[in-house]
Length: 393
Image (tube, rainbow, N blue to C red; front, top):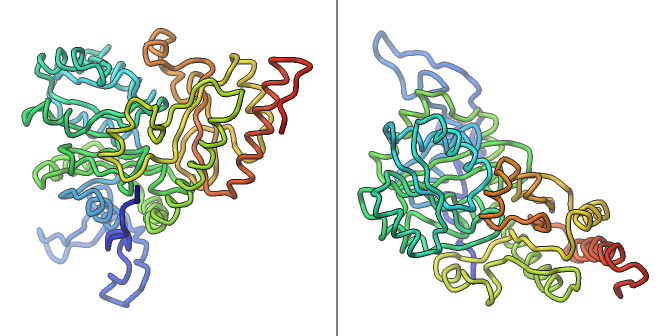
């Protein structure tokens, strides 16, 4: 499989300065812009409503996602909130039972407040999914691969099943437009936490919503201005800089991931690996069809329990215990107590999130160092579980 070829969008505003010919576009920090005359505003009047630096990023992402337009938001969760503004009161939302913990928390909170109705379903269960669609939902939320279990659903099939009257939204954070383009598969909106692969350096928080049609793009722009969740110009500058290296970063992410998967498959401390690139993964065929690559996110179940998990994370040097993902640095996460802690124990159990589940975001460091780091940590879990027996290194 090959990743998306570089397009002009990845240049993200390079050599677009008509005034001075600056190769890198300038940063526009101004909060407001003068009118040319009474009742004659220029292209921009107030930075919450529109900003040149922010628009460069929005236009680049829209081109990469083959969208008509988009909005850059202050965070990934504000991008989710922005989408929900398109719904009327008492709208029905169908969402995956194993979606990102922050999305789960927002949807359940709004449900409890009576602002919408949410139904979480296993979108790989055709009977359960069909039953939900028969209720004529207003919005179908899709997350593929899912966080943190890397489950894959057929975006095209789900969008066709939902039909044209349902707003179809795909969270594409785990793959980025380099590896998957949901609008080409039938989605109406694509959501990103740009904090992740798009920025890629773990130094800015942001989000994006990209729309299939100009009409939908205008609606999300109106709402973004109305509720004031557009991103700051400097954040957009950093994210645009990150976007320009997306493809070259992804190549290293993917190369490292493939070698780490091979290592983990042979390790006696690993009980189960969740990664769409494995032929044994239930979603392998679908991922191969709709993705450009299987991605650089994975999760695995460690033999043992929370004690072994603690031993592992405390014996790592190159993998940092932290939330988020998609940066150049390698991260390790315990979903049950970190990214999905907002889910009740029963909801975690229903989603398949066990105490032994570990999620890895593979960075771009030397893969030999990463594998040696994992070997060191995993071998300590075996020593703890089986005193007197050492795993051969």
